[in-house]
Image 1: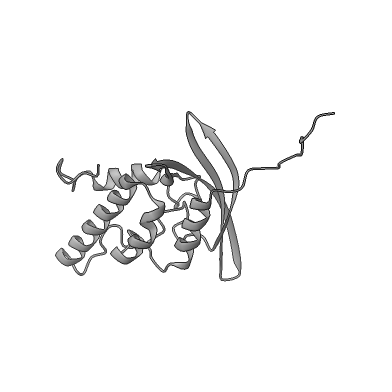
Image 2: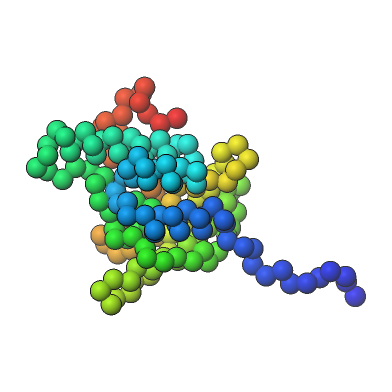
Length: 170
């Protein structure tokens, strides 16, 4: 008879992912986060992802000033999930490690006007020193009009024409 063979059950969800999406859902931020929203989000994000989001906010603000009658890029929509409207709730459903990278599958739900829509995205983790941080989001797809690909790739692609080598995120 083996001692201490209790079934431990699934690992607990990432406190970083849970804290980030709790803050994100409570926030009224859409599009690229404002400076104050980014200060709330930054402790949970990799330096690279935070830099890309800062760059997106600069482009949004610059384009808003340049063409006030046009909608600038990065002004609306949820960047941190597949669905443009963003989630109203979430649950971390699976934790995996592949190729030395921790990943969390998150089931999101948006309830609006009496209708409910659910989807899954995968949060890719990185490290800042010894601390776990969110490094990217792999969009699971929330229909034809949802975000596709990854958050970082989407930001890098949209920012590419505006970034000079000196201003590129490190």
